[in-house]
Length: 318
Image (cartoon, rainbow, N blue to C red):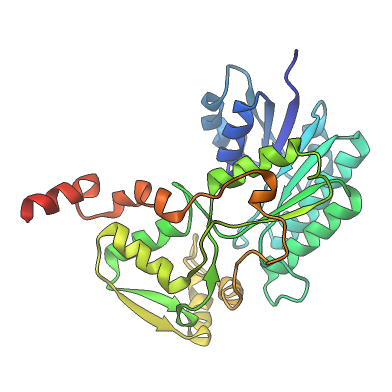
């Protein structure tokens, strides 16, 4: 029996690499559609010979999107940006999502999973959140049977959250607690999100539904910074930073090629990022969420002063 083919848009990113690996294990033939396919070549060893094929596709180009979908039975739509660089929030989150959904409807694609984000809302002051919501609306209008996944902050070996603050702690005498560090998060392991994507493609009740994905524990921003310091073995001040001052600093930080913080991200931090009490969750897809404590130590060790041998060195010193 020939394996079914799936197109994964944005498969070369952080979540994408884990989703591609999970799909390959389930036997899918995968077309990884991204703007720079040479950056996705590292994915090919994750499957059998010829199972994973990077192809060039810009989701803002309807013709390229349709070409990327030919021959596929399903779609996973992942593209998302945290700050505009070359492409705007509207182009990636709205136009791109609309192009994918419209093409899927025209070609009669059987299944679609679209990854959005917790916190999306039309009333939000954040452009990121508003465009994520508009993207969901376009998806639903063109492809009503799409499954939408809204993860909280996603963590894993290549994440931009724990790794960023662990790197900052190597050089900075203090870590900022934006808004006092009271904002709540429900971090979800990237492997669990990848498993949710696979589950949604085969779950009979998933089409047309929206799931919010979070881990088993809710943490404040302060508690997450304390985890970073504990796992890296560093003592740093945790300094409360009012939202207005964080926005002022972010105005200048956003000018960097890879900004540590943007004004839009400060706006996002004004609201909790947790699963709603009435939402469908990982459990409804048959997935037991992984804890932060089970995974984060396995990749933050490289930020310790003596790396993976820090515990051994401490034992000898004692």
